[in-house]
Amino acid sequence: MPLALVSLIFTGAIFGFFYAWVCSTMWGLDAADPRVAIAAMQAMNASVRNAVFAPAFFGTPVVLAAAAWAAWRTARPASLAFATASAIYLGFGLILTMAVNVPMNEALAQVAVPTDRAAAAAIWDAYSPRWQTWNVVRTAASGLALLLAGWAVWRLGRAGRSPERG
Image 1 (cartoon, rainbow, N blue to C red):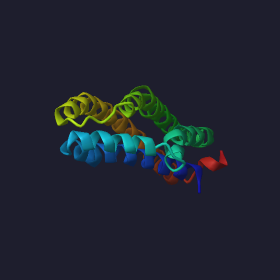
Image 2: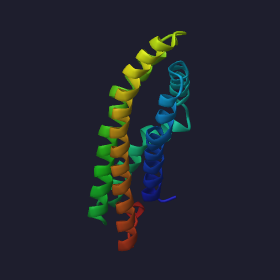
Image 3: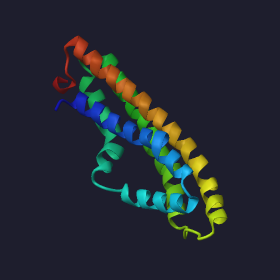
């Protein structure tokens, strides 16, 4: 598969992953009993570190940068869009996740789920709004990266150029 399309697929995959948390997962957990929400979030966070998730999470800035490099000599506007998408996702997707969401998840993983609903609600109320705020930021950044990658692919197609020839 051409490098430009691979970058689009990776960027779309990670955007979709973050977006699903915004519009369904966290709303569902917020509506659940906080004891259930804590246990479910702990389980989801433990399961996300896997070989299916890793390529999109860690590979997206790499394939975007590779597409930028490959397109540089023949399609500079597309190259710049790929490079910008890579930088945006790297800073506000991957690094933000590692700096904010992952430490929050690791702290939540250390919590023993309280049997008392009020105690669980206090834990969940301290966790969920902040986690969701930063998730919206990484979702928006990933969406912008996807838009830029899509524009770059469109630009390459319109110009009849392929970054693989670069």
